[in-house]
Image 1 (tube, rainbow, N blue to C red):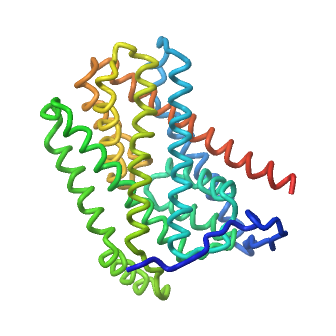
Image 2: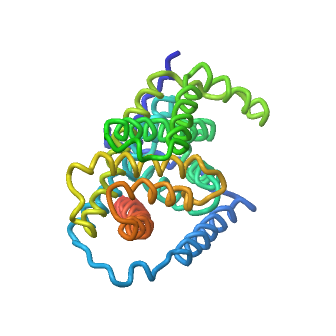
Length: 331
């Protein structure tokens, strides 16, 4: 089944003509949704900061250039997420999309909602904020599900492949390997258009929301392929971080570390009701990193990785929102 065709042309991106303002202004009680959403993010992010064991970071020394490289890789991964989202929306037939910078601004705000327990705030926030720019809520809902599923499938597949190529694979818990493998396979099966569309149809009927947008193989192919590259970017972020504090880790450990970090990330994504998979993701990554470094170093990597991810999340938000506001001010 092919995707619903759509131009996917960004408003005002090519013809130089003034485009109508398609922003939908909330009315009545709906005006409270945005401030409540932002307040929840602030509270959840504050809780996250409070749970960090800062004593672990009190006496560390690190190479700043590797920290910078890690942050840049992290930013690239987040912007890749925006690209995947836009590609999926175009494949689903969304036309006259707002410029990429606007989508990035929306995505960066919703991304911070990952600190709120559960996955619903992140997805719901993205749908609500993007709908204000005139994008169909149905397409937004379907695109969010496709994006989340493709991330699990792609990162899980890449991580397991990289680990399988390493002779130290036997040192990894069988339970962890089975959990991620089952999650990746189940995600791929669920993403097969005949099954995915049937599940969407049942969900839309239950919610009495009409007929869902149909997903085709090109959408599945493109989103999984892009997030396959994203798995490498995300892993490089952690590898560069490790080099900043543990230079004894060699190039021969790079692919194992990328796989281990990705594997832990997938376990976190498959863990419900936990902000960003904290706890399960950290524990999995810690255990896997013990294969290539001492326990003290692995602990430091996990803690510092949480802090750096939070910093990159804030940078992503500042850059994306700042870019969008700067362009809007000049318009």
